[in-house]
Image 1 (cartoon, rainbow, N blue to C red):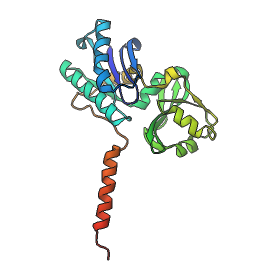
Image 2 (image 1 turned 120 degrees about the horizontal axis):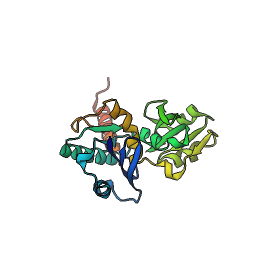
Image 3 (image 1 turned 30 degrees about the vertical axis):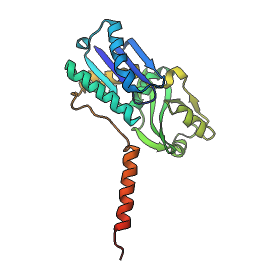
Image 4 (image 1 turned 90 degrees about the vertical axis):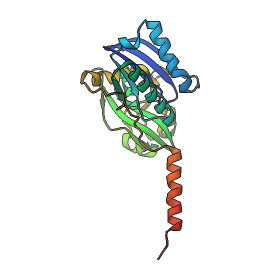
Amino acid sequence: MKILALESSAVSASVALTEDEKLVAQSFQNCGLTHSRTLLPMVENLLANCGVSLADVDAIAVAHGPGSFTGVRIGVATVKGLALGADKPCLGVSTLEAMAWGARALGGDLCCVMDARAGQVYNALFTVEDGRVRRLCDDRAIKLTELAEEIGEAPYFLVGDGADLCYNTIKENCTGLRLAPAELRFATGFGVAAAALPLFREGKTCSPQELDAFYLRRPQAERERMARLAQTKQQTTPHN
């Protein structure tokens, strides 16, 4: 079975084509250009270079979050459009789990982190057993101080675009932390496809209309608006 997989939820963009567990082709960019400019051309070029059309693909997968609100929306919207036009099923997978699948060659325990600002990271913990990824906790937004307390001195490889931030902030209290090699640190299309494959085999696909982004918290602009509304309400509420 062939899976076309897209990743644009973090700083990099990546597209991959897989056939079962085999990586057929992958494109990866971390050049600073917006994903709205790079993602769809990457898809078109990769498929053309492989001599494969969307009609030949069995499903289209995407990292649907957590991550950059804009990046996640671009990835999900692109997959919706491709899947609707080609009448293909979709698979949405966790960005953090895709990171873990992409780095599973490291073995052991993996701490996947993305910078969520304000002293927080998007995080999930995983372990690798017999070449397969097993989740140890749900995706979450967690303070770095809380993460440090949880993992203590346990040995973890740090994976994700928040790895450097996490390592530099809590390494003194978490002596078991190690940075994953740079080439395994970022989310990739292959990681998305690997995470999606078990779901596809279990029949857990969805229609393009059902595919949606997965956010762990509201966008910053919306949080600020809600805070202003709450403050205004407090100021206008009569006090006894």
